[in-house]
Length: 237
Length: 237
DNA sequence: CAGTGGTCTAGACCACTAC
DNA sequence: TAGTGGTCTAGACCACTGC
Image (cartoon, rainbow over all chains, first blue to last red; front, side):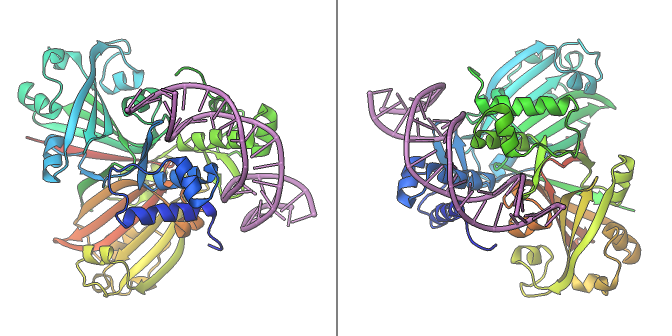
């Protein structure tokens, strides 16, 4: 690095204020125009700095509302047996769930095929959002084979779906195929989480099978700075 | 969505050209100023569109050189037993490795502690970069306990380290603790991969243990659009 | 209605790459 | 040296939120 760019100084300044405890977790930052004036830079420059800090996971924004200091990541095992509520309690994070929709409908070919169905077969589709420490951090879309989950839409869908699957429907021994990748949110998804379209996210796809037959596909979109996935493995050669 | 913003139209236009096959994988896009003229928009606007497509993983940039069409993601199992070269062959992707440095030195407390060592104990640190289909896509930093890998620096470090560990050193039965999170690259890392500081990346940390003792910590930084991690799991309640 | 971030323009100079 | 992306300014108007 030869010389530090202006926006990097601005970013460093804000970072210092966060680390000094002047701006604490969840607190709102000064508005962009205030930052411009305080630091005598153009607005584009201030925004560059904010975007930089956003990429680094230090701050996040609510669409057209403001910039906030990010909370620490949520530690999460995608191969977990128990409900995610367990992990929240364990790490003393408050986790809330809101049901957005639950319907029977035909969905994308990709999902349908994974479920081993022909393309026009309807499935149960459940969409929920979840907050961690008061911030919407996760969007969940779950797809269930209709024939394996009779009466699903009449169940309580605001709690642990993991428990519902194992206790009410009796699917206890399950195998998982998990995919994790980087992505960004489309209009719909962003709207649900109150953030801007195109925000970076971590995508988790989980195909749940019982006796070799895939019964559920779960799709999770996490805000990119909100989560760390932890997995254990064995390796023998 | 009420009305489409200009930069979204620009992004859509470029996306169309990619999907139409006019711009093929690995090809360079027109320069930013050319795009401005072709589409009659300001440069800031053109850049917004490019950043958007970059976030979505459709294009990437080489620092100060240009914008390129991204190749498809590399499918990768972080719990894998075999060398990553296996997976490359399986998916017919060309994978090359370049050793950047191999030294014995003291490293961060976090790493040292994970390895179960006291804070000033030196370890072997191996840094490599890997390309997929000709694009630098992955930066690897591996840390080895000195006492478990005698003579490591004299070995061939340009090939499969997985094989080296199991065949030469005889550590066959290993357990893994894996962490996956979103991050972005610092100056050093970005320089190695020829990209801009702050580019988004997927971070994979792998702690490798034998008989309950952690012997290796591997840190991988993947370009965010270059990889999808796939894991299998069992879940019994 | 005031204030926020989101979008946008028309310029400018700089650091670096490729030739 | 010509051309690229990277940084930067000083404005402007718009869409939306919260009061």
